[in-house]
Image (cartoon, rainbow, N blue to C red):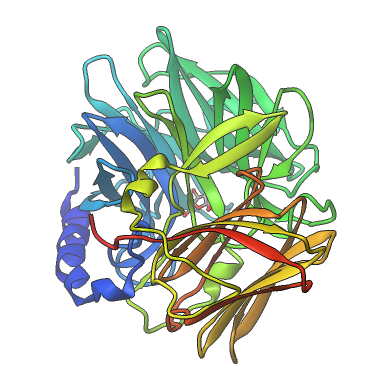
Length: 459
Ligand code: FRU
């Protein structure tokens, strides 16, 4: 294997990460080591650690030929960067190693399954490939590509065929992968294998039939509390259904074959989530804390861009997907500080629980000299607005009961969990100063209770 491309990336990240001031990074969210990151890949528990690989272009804070970067953690909060594991260096992935997933093989080695892309005159040809390793280094397989256009059903495009998610039940490996039919509608294809290397097409898990967006990227499928759950990310959603915004949206479906698509996160900075099963039985989700529309909001000079959400534990309640920050976050809490309706000297990082009563509307506003983020409930809608003064303003909405909130605040993001995790709002920003105040306004009788825990910035 031509390891020069990979070694160049490994040397580059080691050298250039030193130029990034740790105080400029989020304190407890995983962020780009250098350059650009997008989707989480191969989110897995392997050899006593959680491994997170990710879409990565180390050389530039903008998207480029995709590598797989790598980080590990033992507490789901503090990440250790590991050397990049995959680089585009083979005839079947020469233009990029796109998203995928990971599984432990019978013999204890780890298999990464990813999409290789090659630009051709007809389009960007996409195939599914494997690399096997030990948690540090991975070798691409001589059998690659493992799945290519010859294993596609009729009418399926080989140019929109990506993001394999693998899992195992008893002796069989299963894989689902995103595809578009020749009319441009998303569908999710299923494959089976006895060894993880030789795959047979077995049918379609889902077909979009234009219900939401066109291409469905980054599929995930698992059983949660005894029910089937599908999570995916749609390109070009029209936003006509109030459940999800326009553009790039991650949605979930529970209790198949019910055809409802609900937004996983109503903020604008959330896409391509992937889940893993922890040995203690928890199903944990992590997502790219950005989406393609909002990912262009940064300047050329930056040396890094992109971060992941806090890992979120999933459960189901009445068919709704509940997300809650992993319990490990609570270990970072310092003593709760008392607060009123105007909070000055906000801790840089915090975990806040809020219960707002006796008012039919309210507004929470976080502010510094160059940014304001507000959460505004008007009795029907809740809207989040992120306003970077002089640059841009973005809004998104949800409908539901927002009187009970949990808010995680880091240097460059707010993750707001509404109504005990039934809905979430995630927003990020870059290049702004830290918030100075949080103001809570509502009717005169409004009562605000809760806890404000500053979070330790280092373990
Ligand atoms: C989703 C996505 C994937 C693709 C990857 C490329 O965000 O478009 O479908 O594999 O990003 O970086």
